[in-house]
Image 1 (cartoon, rainbow, N blue to C red):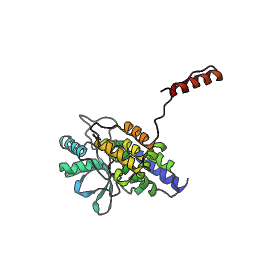
Image 2 (image 1 turned 180 degrees about the vertical axis):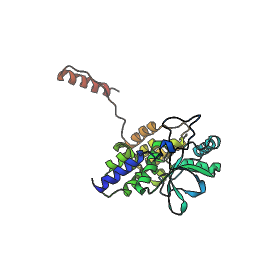
Image 3 (image 1 turned 120 degrees about the vertical axis):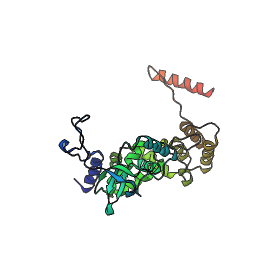
Image 4 (image 1 turned 90 degrees about the vertical axis):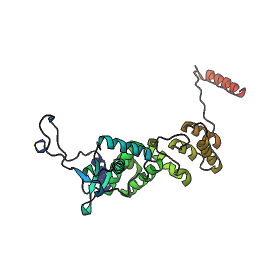
Length: 284
């Protein structure tokens, strides 16, 4: 197995590898009244002071939505943090965040002093970044532009001869979806900055990924592109993404394709019906 294949296999394997567990007879769970067969204690689950945890500066996400973060903070304040975050032990007795940044930020808002954490050691940079990227892709609340930049960065962390198919397999994306995401980087910067994440609860006049794909059709027609953007942003009634795509095709001069079905017995019958359809269209 090549060095590249081994690295990709390690990344994929680490994403599904279960945490190290102690044997049941070592667990610190009382046998009564709620002990149960098969219950085990996680050896590397710890309560860590929040001020000993640092965010990862390479995290794919560059922005968090205030509204959803406040909702999560309210939930944590009421019920506590129900799911541990994942951290890596680093030098100086500190810990670097791997996954769970929204929970970490919400805990800061609430004012928690310590967090339940799964502690890992010697996590490769590509491995750590893959986990963060997959977590955000699964939540679908990462900005489309952040997704695109994150995919490019992740590929840059892998061996130089890594192909996109290997990246797609590692992060669980289809080739078509990956191409859709990366294509958004061809938009002008001022339009890229307008894109919102699906999980950000796009409201009236916000630019979603589907709106962005519509704008992308007009990349070679800046005036029409700006006109469509203004229409989406200023419309009194929200313009759905599919409607924006249809508008973009019209502005680009591409009419929406129409189809019709014909049943025929033989070539002569087919020709007759096609000629009849042409005559019908000419009278419209």
